[in-house]
Structure formats: structure tokens, C-alpha cells
Image (cartoon, rainbow, N blue to C red; front, side, top):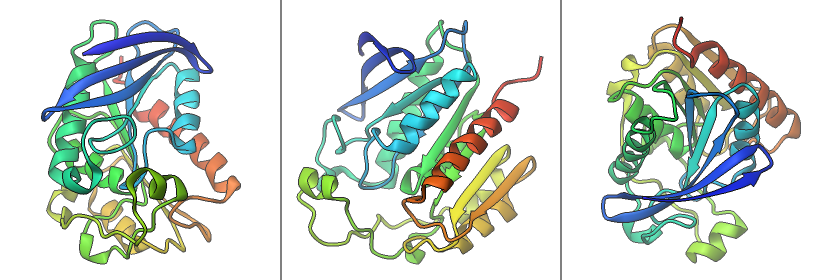
Length: 250
């Protein structure tokens, strides 16, 4: 594991590289001034990376509340090793996230309480890992629970350049509906007009999850959360959810 410290907009930052399944993954840990802070780990979508505006804004808001925030690139994405077209699968991304959880949980300067945020396919990955590990709290945005419901995923211009993708992509096949009853302390967010993942997936996820839970369907919201109003409301509501549910009592 490699680490590089620097000062960032949110406080102290560490650039971290770690191994997962033979791949060197790259991430950034945003640290608040708090002692042994609870942790939030962010997961990007299928064709994204860890530099999304949602994650940067959530990292900033989380630090202000005393949480550490870790965002990283999955194998085949961003600054991490691997090839997107060869190494992208639900199982591999779950392995990456589990290794990120273990990496941070082993650090004596961080607290043991870990929460997850996942966007789109990153939400699916977070749901899988939260059902298998000790995760305190979870926020999912536009997460599909069955691949057969997902329409073609169009790459952003950055992803088209980085991965050489010209046509809409289909996500790897999966169905995680059997895991949904294992979730609790979950805030489910979805755009009413999501053109890729049907809003019914969010309704199903929320319905099967255990309390405490919350559902927010964004009026006229799309898959990228492109409306500025939605982005600002999301950061405020998600960070409050983590603040209310992501710290163990006492």
C-alpha cells in the first residue's frame, strides 16, 4: 500500500494505492480534524471514476461533519490498474470495495464505523457489500437491482475518450433482489425520470429494506442528477443521513 499526504480543499488528503485481486487501485482519503473519525466510502458508476462532482461535494460535506471520506477508482477505471473492457464485473468490483473496507478498518487513526455511498452501478456494488459486511449506514443513488431492467448506458465524453467507448454499454448481468431484505439504515434516492434505471428498482429496494430507511424520488430527476437543485439537496440530505445514522450510539 502506498500513501502520499497533501493539503486539500476539504482538509488533509491522502493519495492511497492498494492491491485488490492483483490490480493496483488508486484512491483519495479526505480527513477531517476529528480523532478516529467514522468513515464513508464512495463508489462510482459503471463508466465513471472517483472524481465525480457528487463525490467531491459529499466528501466536503462529510468532512465538515467529522467524517473521513474515501473515494477510489475501481479496477479498469480512472487511475487504477486494469482494462475496463476486460476487468469489469460485479464480482470484481465487490472484491475491490471489500478490500477498501478492510484497508480502512485496519487503520488505527480511523474509527471502526464504516458507511457506504454508491451511485448507479456503484450503488449495486455497495448494496452487495453491505449485505455481507458490517456496514453502519448506506446511501444509494439510481442503483439497479436487476440488470435486465437497465437500458443502454451511454458514456460521457470523458469516458468515451478514456475507454474508447462509442456505443451505449450494457451492465454485467446480475440480480441482487435476494439480498435486499438484509439492508437497514438506508437512504434510497432515485430520479423520477431516470432514463437508464427504472424508478421501480428504488421502490423495491426501499420496500424490502428494514428500518430505519428513507426514500426520496427526485421530481423530474434523471440518471446523472444533472439538475443543480437536486445536487444541492442531495448533498445536504445524504450528509445528514450519515450524520444521523453513521455514528454508533454512545
